Length: 585
Image (cartoon, rainbow, N blue to C red):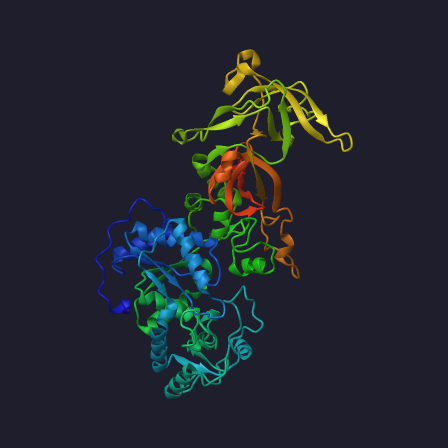
């Protein structure tokens, strides 16, 4: 690819489109740049490092960079910032591409890799050496921290530290630096022996400006270029110059990079390349989870979860396996907007967005998680009646299905009480309820295991005049329960997922303690004895359903001893809707 700084400027961008809505402050920055003539078009990029799987925080960044490009009729690149051979892998590249596509975004033919720019970056490093603003340094990592004044600095306050002091090798001649840098590339020195640093200001109040490292020696094969290089560019050097090469107008990134913006601009100015502009926005923080690849990797490595795609993980793949839809995640992003300051978003809002989407899309079925036998005593043995059941009351086009009604049925164990508590409208001796889509039944008794005292079956009679919701006024009942035929059903395993962490802010721990101590021991409950309508046997992985009165579930790719597995995506109870109704949102 040719250097964008030398390319002719594209035609001026038209007015913003109305279909997307990035935050006002980013939109205003971009619009001002177009009106002032700073740029004549809009070109953004999503630049993940392929060292882990994307999480919902990345989904926010994706929605912003693609959304801004779409609104201003521009383009958005997918570029992998793959300059660290120690942690990067092709499997992560493929996972990232799959997740971005699944979210509904398309980079078309604009897929790039920083590793393809190694020669270009090397030439720019030589240019900075020749200008006298870069030098080869012999300090070790520990010595460098001492000289920079960061050996005892507060890592959370990198703008208020004592001034550093110059390296003894800072004033090497241009010729010596060029020679040493060429020999670094040739592999003449051991790993860590030398670095290439920018010559800026060792007394600068911003630590990132204190002669940052541009290149380090690292003999490790790269997943794309193999052993072709033994020097690798650092992120702060590579990133702005890769943006410039691609003609990126607006480098949109999270707020932690605000402190790096002066260095971003410095490298662009000194290299005399396309003047990309960096704009920061607040990163996403969601309650009861962690959004850092480092901490997520620790969860995976310590086997606290089954993998990157564990449905309890906030990764895109985990959310997909949990049953989330791309539309629900995009809706979540549009609701939270983009701010300039960090804040915590309640995970209940994310769940609310999923419920709203699945309520419109998911077919209803009946499934019983903890089955208890219900015997309809006045129903003939062997008689099967096919009843009509509505697939989705929110979508008339979804039609109906047939469910088999038989003498013996399964009901939820919690839907019967020998001695009911107050305001209990389900089954108990003498009480009547409606069986969903079927008949009103009246409890006539129950069977109990004399040894354990456990209820083994409930007995009832049905009223044939009350079929399918029809009932005289004198036969109305207050309770409706779901059921599954005990003669036509599929056994299944239900996995009930809860929050991975038991506290709102898992990373808020006292010194000497680990965030792992905040893991929720009840984040997964496996229910092996569940049963469902027989149609669930043919459900494809990824198919989503509402198990009536239970929750929203998705068919997992796993089987459990030949039984289909269904993951609970979210319960039916919507805490966010209640908060919103009270005006607390």
